[in-house]
Each structure stands twice: as C-alpha cells, then as structure tokens.
Length: 377
Image (cartoon, rainbow, N blue to C red; front, side):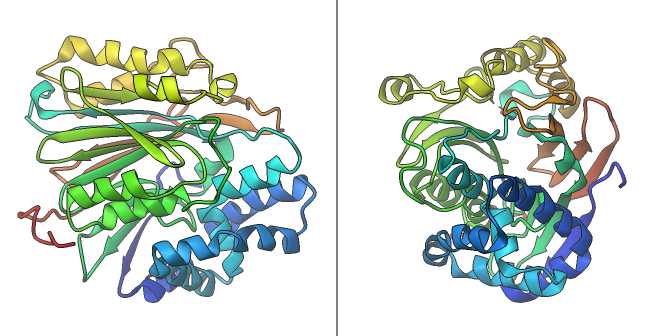
C-alpha cells in the first residue's frame, strides 16, 4: 500500500455518501473489519456473538443521530460488507472493551499526543493543531481521508479508519478536532455514544460553540480526551469522563495533552486507571511543550512536526517506532499517523508510520469566508 492515505470525495445524503464511500475502498474496509473482527474472534466470540455486541450500541446511535446509521448502511451496501461490521468499526473501542470485560482482560487502547498552538505563538498569526495517533501498526493499512461536501452545513475533511465516519479533522468554518485516550474508574459502567460519532458531530456542527456542546454533553461509554480548536484563535481541551467533562485552557498559547488526566479537579474526583499501559504519557506532553516553547512567537507547522518527531525515550517516545504492544497481544504498536492542520487555511498533512517514514500527503478543504454562516441551533 502507498505511504499516502487515499482521499475519498463524498456528497449527497447520508445513504448516498455511504454508498460512495463503500464503493471507493471496499478492500481497505475489509482490512478494518479483519483487524477488529479477529480481535473479537480471538476472545472466543463468533460472528453471531459479535453482532449481538454491536446491536447493544444501535439504540444510542439512533437516538444521537439516525443519519449516521443510514450512512453506515450505505457503506455496507457500497462495500458489500455486513452492516454490523461497519458499526463495529465505528464503535470498536467500546465493543472491544465490552468483549474484554467478560474475560477480565485489559485491552490495548489508542495512545496519542496532541497539541494546539494559538496565534500569539505562531509566525503567521494562525492556529496550528496536530496529533500523533499511537495504535496498532497494521492500522496504517486502513487509514483514509474523507472530503465530505454537505448541503446542510459545513464541509468536512477528516482522517479515519476505513469504514469509520471520523477521527481527526476540520470543517470549512474553522473547527478542528483530535482525540487521545484516557481511562478512569468510571469507564464502561453504562453504554454511551461511540467516540468517532461524537467527533463527526463536532465537525458537522453549525458553529464552534455547538462543536463544544457535542463533545461536552454527549454521554460516553469510556473516558477520552478531545482537543478542539477554532481558526479565529481559540482552543480548548476536554478531559471527558463518561458522565462529566473537565476543561483545560492554553498556557502561553499552548495546549498539549497525552494520555493522563491533567485537570486538578479530575485528579481529585477520578482514579486514573490507564497509566499501566502508557507510563511514558507523563513525559510525552512535557517533551512537546519543551520543544515548542523556545520558538514562541515564530512557530510554524514545521516546528510542530519536529516536536511530534521527538524520539526521547524511544521506543516509548512521542513518535513511537514499531514495538510490541502493551497488552501482550501478538501485534506491534506504533505511531500510526502524524496529523497536522492549519484550520484557517483548510490545510492538512498526514504521514503514515512517521517513525519510519517522513513522506506526508497533503489535503485541502475550501474554507468559508464567514465562520458564522450556518450559526443556528
């Protein structure tokens, strides 16, 4: 497979978009299904059991946004794969947790280091937003970029796993989002909305304030960290427990986050249960901050890229080279993708497996001149 992630153009209604998506990359979607389906099969589930797990999430998805199920039905139709398999991709974190819970086993979860740089720190008075996505190395085979042209709201450019509706991305009214794993003692006590769908909702929102609402108020199954920025010059980090959020704001125009709780309030109220799988989280964010701060006032996307290439402590580094996973499973973990965005310009660039590859694909989104164009509830 090419080092560059393919870009898929989508338009029309939800089902039509899904059909276009499925037809564009059926083999890549098949690989996504194979990766996560095999994890569940290895736990002892058969496909009938996997479908039962998937169906537990459908009422919450239907209540949150029925069009997302329609789009997933379209993906299934276009790709020739089972509808439940497409839902599994979009709820894979939650479904794998449910499957593991019955075995009292701990799954490997996404790592990630994210950063937002606000205009006061940059050379060109613009927002910079990026992330290293740490996960299963084989998922470098399944990344795609979706360019979604919408008739009822802002257009969307998002990097995701093939078959997924969103992961990291931006929209044409200046909003950008990335996400990092968090864990707490409140996780997986109830079922919430799968995380990729919350991110898609944030990208489809008619105004940045409504993107914030989507992240802050939507119930989640497990904890997660979501970083939101806006091209006009604002950034916010939401440390999300399933039923509560803890906002963090910039310090000296920088917001950096890894995989541990930083909010003092969260540290009092929650038990951090994820450090066993990512002990290096406590230096990854500090390393990125340390590498960016000397260039305050002159930062560019190249500085952010350089910070994300940091190899301090390798193989437990900001830029993770392929190494055995923390879960003990027979797979390699790595920084699967480095995603960098300039939301005001609609510019995104992504490298696959950046610890061993420095070729970036570039992707563009036509921006609206009026960020408030769609500003209704």
